[in-house]
Image 1 (cartoon, rainbow, N blue to C red):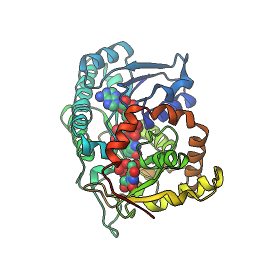
Image 2: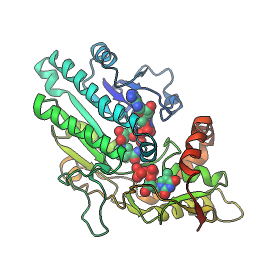
Image 3: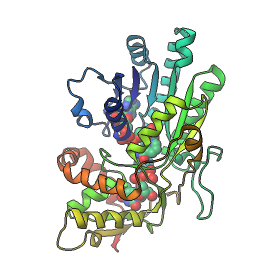
Length: 356
Ligand code: NAD
Ligand code: TYD
């Protein structure tokens, strides 16, 4: 069996659902259920003995030690993190605690567990660390995309905490021989993404007739990857990634934020028409402090070594995503509780805005 951390969040729950649809190998899913963790994400696994959910904190080393002893996994896939840049600007403490201290605690518990395994089991074990392209900082318009050898230059509290976790993972391999592999992935989108991130936030606001906030001039570029493609890449890294190596994972899909939002509006105009186009709701608002201008991934190593390429194009992935949110408006409504509205107020009320 495998141990997944953060499997109640966006990518983790997609990974668990994909994993159990493709194999019968059980999953222990450890998640603290912060605001971002949602048991409804794996409601379809209710009663499925292959999925064991444990509510707990990755900083709790005793809990992790006991889970490892009890379930004896052959791999850990580590998603659990605080993941939203804007929240890291408002309150970086939780990011240092979970992303840095939590990864440290997981590495130490894993090291102790491996000491008790046979050489064969130890050789087969994998610690797969799920990270981000944001650790590389920001690209200029003509710079080559990030490769695995691009120097780290994180700019936000979020990316700095992920960079720190990547360094710990690397060091635990180098010093203690921990069998690690790391994926550095670009921006994901797709079903089950919490509506604080750009794409689900725009869909939710559009359907509610609310302004669609674009930070700054909207010309910031991200390299968008459909979440199912990230999950398939991670399965390949787990199967065939070389120990101690990092793999950049991306969609070959660079888009400016304003173009992403126009694409969403056009899809909504088609799939959920209203009197006037949704694009009328676009509103430029005060920029994010320290906003990275451009991310882009060179994913040739993953293709060369793992034979992985994304299956979805931006067009097919965005259409599936918009349709999923239209079909799951209850899921969104359930999240839009008091906590969520407080966050929206905190992040957006201070930003001045102007319609496009
Ligand atoms: P998310 O915020 O949707 O989910 C994070 C999950 O971790 C939640 O279920 C939360 O409850 C859980 N969690 C948080 N703190 C915890 C703790 N201390 N102990 C146990 N569980 C805890 O995040 P996501 O978008 O699914 O991202 C998952 C991972 O992928 C993160 O490590 C993130 O850095 C990385 N990543 C995300 C993206 C993206 O575009 N979303 C891109 C590249 C990499
Ligand atoms: P986000 O989804 O928060 O991901 P990240 O910051 O990790 O890239 O944001 C994606 C891009 O969209 C980023 O450039 C910030 C921008 N953005 C907006 O313009 N408006 C918004 O309301 C949000 C949440 C993000």
